[in-house]
Image (cartoon, rainbow, N blue to C red; front, top):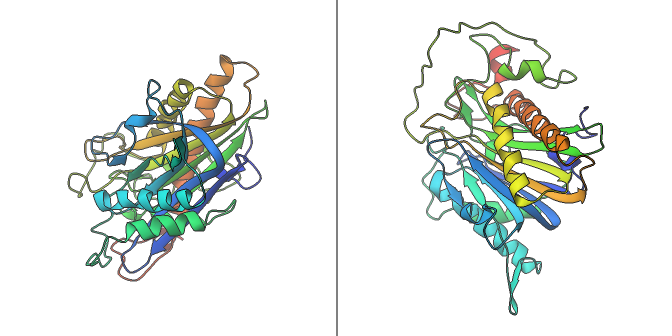
Length: 328
């Protein structure tokens, strides 16, 4: 396996990512979209999730494909970002056809960034506009760090951020990850700069600091309160998958979150992973290649988490330093 040419989730052909942010509020939204509907699924392991239309993604439900996936800040307010995306897609003539109407299917998930130093005194919910702006900005290339849904994200002791990574398997299938990192846990070891995800780093993509040291007996020291966290992610592939297989891909990808964030999947995080399959390429070996996909998904996600935090940039009124400010 090796990273794709961009080392972004958009190495999966046909996918685009758009970001929009408000620097005063310290928040934003991120959208993953394709020119055609794609198979989607979800797996939730955190104890405090916030979601839209995730029940629809179960393998036994009527709609098997979606038009876009949305990650947003803003806690429950941020669920409105998907409404802005749905409006934009409807204007494009996209959506599930019912009679003479089209209804865009846009599942979404949110993270909590309401106590990060930004001005939250808005008169009107800003997230619908942020979602529409993110859709309008969708492209094959996009920046990482303090952008989109990662704008106001934090982790233990550092600013969080938006991360992405990709892998091309030996069979030619591509897997990519997109993640907004906003965890109760830590992404670096102890008091040093080394990332928990270091064992999976490729080409010094988040600094090349190697494996750090930590005290395995040290207990977590969370200062956040219930619901003030959540890491939300999307795994995508160009493999041909059923919705049940796509669900298994999302499930396997949670290993990557556990590799990169300590602790992860806590009662206070809403940790969630969407999976998306564009169905462009049949799996050469339907059995063993499914295992390869799950491993690649976990590896991509671990790397994407570290890349998002590594790329964070400082802004006015930040309550935590960036990785660069603390360690460079």
